[in-house]
Length: 139
Image (cartoon, rainbow, N blue to C red; front, side, top):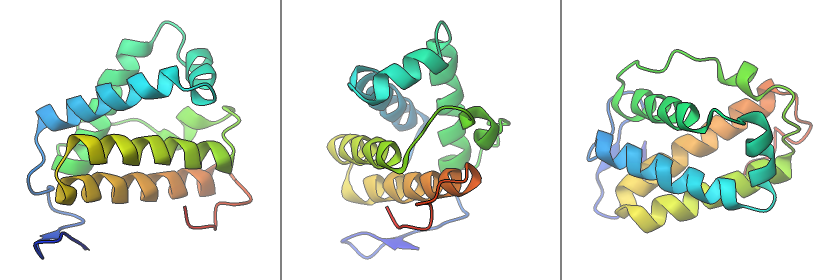
């Protein structure tokens, strides 16, 4: 469990305390706006999602809703979706850095910590699943 400065814990399996659908949408929209403008990440996402950007954002809202609120709305397969995208450990680190910066700017520390913890776990799992040689490294 992650602990905030106030000592409250954020359960790993239960819905995240203090997280709302509106917050998830704000995080996804703000974060992916930064991703698409990023000189290294932007071209990868432009190529992978050409013409499907709004669909991707809706899917990411469902994904994070399933993670944070246990809604079960996301039914996709993240490993398969990221195959063939040439995602290096450095690009995962850049993605995480942007995500962490965005979450910290938007939310109180306990909510930010929840999102960042889950993003790190997801990135590590994706790297392992995609066979990244540096997947064992902690990001």
